[in-house]
Length: 406
Ligand code: FAD
Ligand code: NAD
Image (cartoon, rainbow, N blue to C red; front, side, top):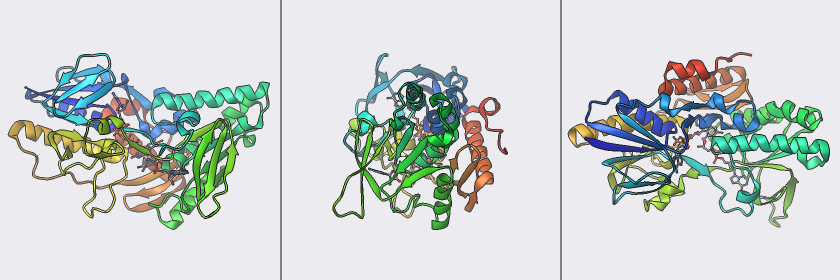
């Protein structure tokens, strides 16, 4: 009986387990390790951070997905894995040995070593961090009532990629709640974004990116572009304009600073001695590590090159799910025949849609640009499909987005 160990129950890891369970024939056993007892929809973290969705709406228990006849679930933190010894070390359990390993440990915040970013800015890469952001905002607003420091009403987002843009939209929706706590009107809450790029959202056409940026601005969010954050201190975001040869520092003062300048793969991947950059491995066509044929690296810890070989596909939940599905098929083939599938992993993106608050969005779906309320409905349907792909209809009925049209 072959032992398959899966690290991480995000989109990639849980999809792998879900598919493997469907294909189980007694020839393998699965052990799934994850920090928490629940899976979270990382695509909705900004809503928990803004307080527009409770944690319960974006999480579900891993035990609901696991089939105990095939899979053992261990709730623990992976502290390291050793591809040569074929072992995994855990914080609170004995080491695990494996025949095949699936590394699906996801993403962490990338601060690029910017001074003060880790200490003074709030990251948003998991449920605990997202909840901490919401709690922080409410505390600062409550404090404002006792001591009306205007910086308490300022929220700064460093980085206006998809994550920053979606967060800004959700925070704009949350303004009413924050204002109530502070005893002010919603328009008194000032949301600002700072981004190093001169042209935001470069993967979209000029028109679509401009539409998205204007949509966010229409909610009263300031967006400063060509502005690279170079330091964060307690309450200050310090940036310089790219065009400015003197590099004069400017600052935004705010009691809430949220960090969304990008993500990297889990550092355990670098620490395992793999040929990785920022926690990401360029896998083989079968999504294995080039030096370890029995180890798959998928989801945000993988940088998958498209056939044209220019830049890796963006790391998304969509590609993570596709990788999980492929790996389950490939693994079953390897266990049964000793060989990989004839076909390597092929990815076809369904598109990218960014939400701006609960009712509007913009993006490209199935090759067509989509905007406004329809785009928002499309995004919710994609989210429901992703829930269904892992959790089945039970989870869709419990957590699915049926508030499509408002
Ligand atoms: P993750 O989702 O990060 O899951 C990793 C899992 O591993 C987690 O359960 C974590 O708890 C666990 N883990 C980590 N370290 C350890 C450890 N040491 N021990 C044990 N367990 C561990 N993508 C889209 O396609 N569409 C979107 O609309 C979209 N929106 C997004 C919005 C936001 C705000 C963000 C932040 C991202 C968004 N993304 C979106 C990107 C998407 O969320 C990621 O690409 C996706 O989550 C990657 O999936 P994954 O399974 O590789 O990793
Ligand atoms: P990103 O890398 O896409 O964007 C980071 C942004 O931060 C960029 O605009 C960059 O110019 C800016 N930046 C970097 N350093 C800076 C600095 N020092 N000062 C100011 N600005 C700085 O990262 P992300 O938005 O976190 O997205 C991560 C991944 O998740 C991407 O692959 C993205 O496609 C995916 N994602 C997808 C969706 C969606 O499909 N709706 C939503 C969120 C995230």
